[in-house]
Length: 276
Image 1 (tube, rainbow, N blue to C red):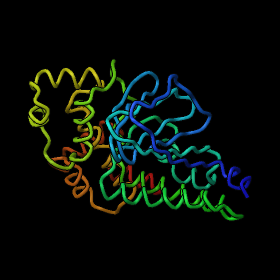
Image 2: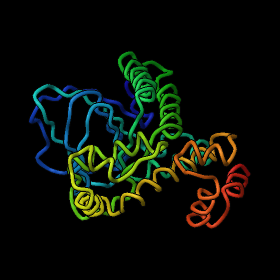
Image 3: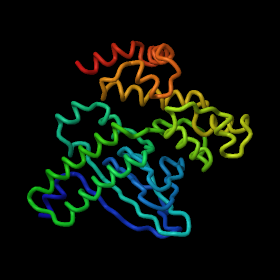
């Protein structure tokens, strides 16, 4: 029975980690790793760049990227790690979902809403249950649950550290600002408001944000809004105007201009091509 489970190419592991526990060295895998921090706090280092993770944060590490974790605070942390070989998922599934294939081939942090965290944790519990009492059906169930997780994540997650270009580690205040943007991109968000939230001078906050993320505040905010709007074009039948406004753009015309600049086509043409 155990061999059937291992042959699925998908492995899930849940552990409690004490404060100050950490790896002394970076390591790599020939498979994708999905790290979810259910409770506690840790610093997650990927390719020698550090990110601060808190309860409910999720990080995807593509195959071959060097990474390690160090746990912080005064209480234990609980983490869940999924290891997935890309060829473990059905070829027809990967061909039908190029966005998911790209997601698993990238290294990034994903911010989850509270509702999305509950859905994902429920899927993780089902996967863990399968590993505790494996049988002849476990491998197939693990693949189905993994596909369910990936579709759920792609539909509702906000991908905030895709291809980070900053020149230094992400500090705690900038990390919190990034999380705030990811959860509030649909509302009016200004640099002055965020700077005040973290008790920083707006000009200093602006320079620090640019240095650590590689983007200005406005560029990053529009990046998140555009990524979510693009996802809505693919996964919903909502009108272009509704998508634009629900993603924080102040008008559909401004959204269309931004979209054309990025994709060299209109949102409507993009949707039609994707559906075909």
